[in-house]
Amino acid sequence: MLRTLSTQLPAHVGATVRIAGWVHRRRLLKSVAFLIVRDAAGLAQVVVTDPAVRAAVDKLTEESVVEVTATVVANGAAPAGVELTEPTVRPLGPPAVPPPFDLYRPALTATLPTQLDHAPTALRHPSRSAALRVSAASVAGFRAALDIRDFVEIHTPKVVASSTESGANVFALDWFGRPAYLAQSPQFYKQLMVGVFERVYEVGPVFRAEPHDTVRHLAQYTSLDAELGFVTDHRDVMAVLRDTLAGMLDAVADRAGAALATLGVTPPPVPAQIPAVHFTEALAIAGAPADEPDLAPAHERALGEWARREHGSEFVFVTGYPMAKRPFYTHPDPARPAYSNGFDLLFRGVELVTGGQRLHRYDDYLAALAARGEPVEPYAGYVDAFRHGMPPHGGFAIGLERFVARLTGATNVREVTAFPRDLHRLTP
Image (cartoon, helix red, strand yellow):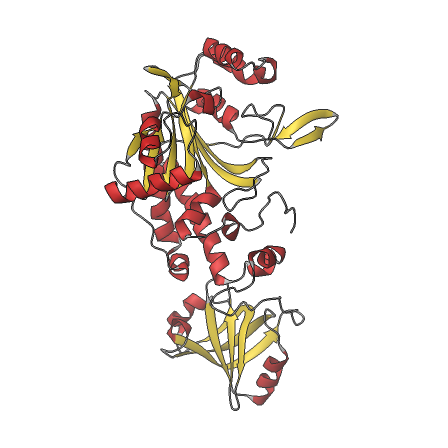
């Protein structure tokens, strides 16, 4: 007999089926027992009246894995409108050791550190697994939105010979006796692959050895990167990003509707034209000094409130960040060289995406590195490619975990990360 998932039971009323899953909850009453079995799709209610079966159920612990063969009966009060009667219950392993929190309760009441310490079981709670389903749907939407626009998915090295962002916040390692680093981003490689495919994207881990201990930072996170050639400037990149975000949210609504319902989340619309302000205007809106070199979290929140109030948008672009705050490969604004053809996208008052137009001429790279006092040698394999003809290009990177956290309303990015890595956590 084939296994039936809990959500498939309504199609089998009157039939005998086999389900399997975890003991989510037991309710032992005087004349009847209820066994709630959880599988990947949801919950199934099993009604036990036979004394021998009841005795077997009494010995089960929550989270034990079982197989149940029973008859499907309609019952509007049961999960999915059906329940299972006249069951045979067979354990598929020894009784489970109950976790240090109750997974059957609507809310997982354990502290976040406790949840993270026991992540393999905490993630079984519907609220935690729902966030991961949203994450999976977001990635599917990202890929689909770019596939339809003729982007090619690539896979780049995560061990590199030099840092990507010209900074010291890298994880160093020994590569067969030579110094190497975990990649901060696929930036160099995705630019080089524009010279092959014109339009590329990647979904993969990136590593930042930044000693941040905040609710929005991780030392390892998943980056959704895209790069496209033959752009006029950064506005072409912003247009592709807008459509990509819309595709991601459409996929979440389509593929993770039940997860959204579990979390009580309604995805926001992506405006046909996301409001955009220049960095200098953003400072004024946020009430920051005109000589401020960057946006602080409080400034980002103020801009998010402004976008909602003035444009009804949960998204806002900030363009033209100072060149001094952008990586060396960033293309300056030809009309205002102190400012960049770069942007950040804020989602609900938090930076979600960084992107922009890149340099594409070899001589410009030499000049940019010299202006920052950077030697060319560590970047030779990257910079040399621009001697051989590269089109004007640009791209962006979305932090997946931060996107899901903002979408679901999680207060800490670790709530939507299966096994987070940060300043303090290297296990499980």
